[in-house]
Length: 456
Image (cartoon, rainbow, N blue to C red; front, side, top):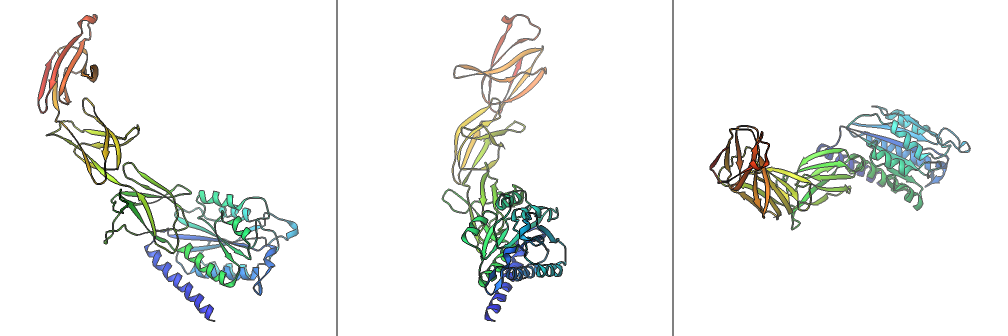
């Protein structure tokens, strides 16, 4: 009697905790749980003054009662090994006996109590078939609980099928409850799901509590965004959380510090593995994050950041001046930043290309923790070109003893260019001219905040 009271108290505590966590957790509106029940011939084996089939029946009914107390839960029952005898060796002896539906618990319990062990153990086939058992609804958590006493007796690999269906998003990582099992049994099934031994009544009661808790509760965690000194003080950046198996986006959260100045608490489904992308510049990825049920999980990600600021002395006359930022030694653009703004980047070394006329380049700019690296350029000037004829013409400058192209002169007769201060050469000829010797060169200087006028 004392054991029963303690058991009921444990279940009550689990259910109350789950109810509280469901209010806080970011979970889908519905959970569907398919119980795959072993009714093969070996389930007649004695166990603790009973038989495995009787123990499995009681376990399944307790599970159903516990799970059905939650809101928005539907349960279904698939049975294998119950239609054909063992000598028939039927490797497709598996059937959805009670499909998903509201208020089907009485039918399910009646079916469980009527089962008589007969045949073989087609676990892989049953897992494969259960893909058709789940309705094709989006935003629903699909779970599988397998109650079995035997290893696969037919062709097929339960591990490979389970992993493939998890990757497709058919169901989350299954729970596998082994009755009267051995160490080999555990080794064979750990790759297919989360495995639990149930060799004694105490084991069975504990497993029911654990499975219910893990199936229905979200687990608390916090994401610590670490600076260079490994302090969790980085924040105000978007985090995208993906299912590591299906690669589907589940949540987008703006990282937040709570009222106590520590990273805010999230509640995530512990049956998934997660990939997390922190949208810093450049982004940081953490893959295959697993949560431990029953504890507050800390997910630490290194994202030390500093800033780059772009300024122009005085007023910039560029209509929309920007700078291209790449990681030093790499060619992929990580950002195009507008001038007179400040933006945070991961600490490191960057190369910059400022889209002025002519281009300005800064190599090996160091961004350090909580510091701002500022790039200031001189105020540009204005070049006013007045043409009286059609020209083939360009603007150049001397750099390190070499002539370097800066800009083309357009077809318009009146043209304005915003340019950086410096000395330049305009080189060209009249478009109708047929003799090269009539190429002309005209030197000019651009100064900040002033207009230089050229008449050709």
